[in-house]
Amino acid sequence: MKSLLPPQKINSDLASTVFGVGAAVVGAMDVNQPKQEHLLALKVMRLTKPTLFTNIPVTCEERDLPGDLFNNLMKEDPSTVKGAEILMLGEMLTLPQNFGNIFLGETFSSYISVHNDSNQIVKDIQVKADLQTSSQRLNLSASSAVVSELKQDSCIDDVIHHEVKEIGTHILVCAVSYTTQTGEKMYFRKFFKFQVLKPLDVKTKFYNAETDEVFLEAQIQNITTSPMFMEKVSLEPSLMYNVSELNSVGDNGEGLSTFGSKTYLQPMDTRQYLYCLKPKPEFAEKAGVIKGVTVIGKLDIVWKTNLGERGRLQTSQLQRMAPGYGDVRLSLETIPDTVSLEEPFDITCKITNCSERTMDLILEMCNTSSIHWCGVSGRQLGKLHPSSSMFLTLTLLSSVQGLQSVSGLRLTDTFLKRTYEYDDIAQVCVVSSTIQVES
Image (cartoon, rainbow, N blue to C red; front, side):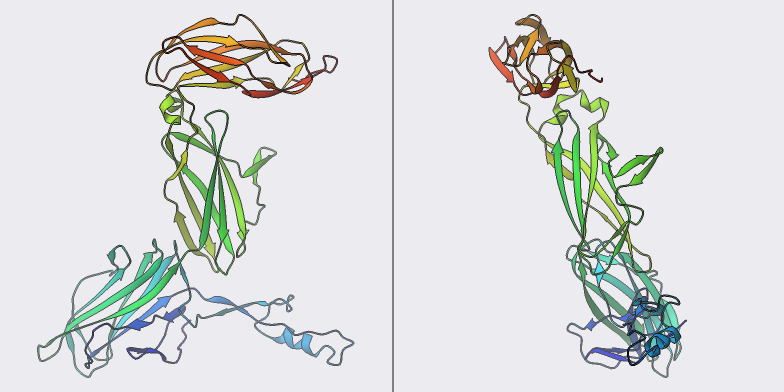
């Protein structure tokens, strides 16, 4: 299907006729171009998808004066949806009447046509299309070959595509060179300026677990004026991490999205995505991986709008400031959730040397008002080399019911006579021994 629209005056430098489904005129701006008559005419149009026709339904009740007049007119209207005439969205398509908006991550498509308006044959025609951004200049021409000749009322057509990766001002530079029958070489160019807008607002938050796990919350907001179908939102982790998505719930062995079956994001709506990152085994044993600034990965977002226009964005590498653990790090590997009052229970601790020197450690256990340690305090743990770890199984009991904090561990380095204190390591629920404790 083709549509012919009347000529549209963009400015003093361009007056062209739009043709073809989904074509919209691109505004032209000539810079320092002398006014002269050329044998060729350059027309540039943006190619976009049509949109669904919208109408405003007018209806009334049967007891009103018009009766069923308005309802019958809507049923006979070819632009309405049969059986749902009062809906604003029709089933007909409308060709775009303006340039529209271009968003970051979408594909910019343009139709370029060079037409011979003269009554003579033009030779050695070359058409070149470049896209100038704030940081680079890209050649978008499908072919740089020279057309030997162009007869009168004939044209050279080209369609260019470019995935927009920068926001801000873009300038499409179209240059045409040719030779007249008298051998005179002619050249002209036009500049087509447009703005690229940001479609999504992405914010990230990091949460550090007691272990080396990192939780990433990504808040994605649709800042366009039309709904989006979120096809994919994934996290590509760095080489040091494995990632698991926490955006689905299990149901009969199948994961269902927490956002429901319709993953549409309305304008100005925000959606939170959650991911859990764990260091790979070969990096988890190295204490240096958890110190300083750590690269997490990057988000990959794919969406569709209107009639299936596809957009894709990738964030830059996300970084988080890892918590500092000092020279020695103590973490809990295993601990029961619930224990019985005045009955011993075991916990497993992991001690990691995060410094660059060897340590000779002594373990001391200090009782608190509710937590009592079972075993010998002040025992030698031996030498611990840099980036090395050791596991300890300790026994303790609680004399008070309720949620109790595990505290009172002390590590002393005999080389530097330095003591490291660890309180409020974890919490455990203590119940009466008469209540059966579930493992």
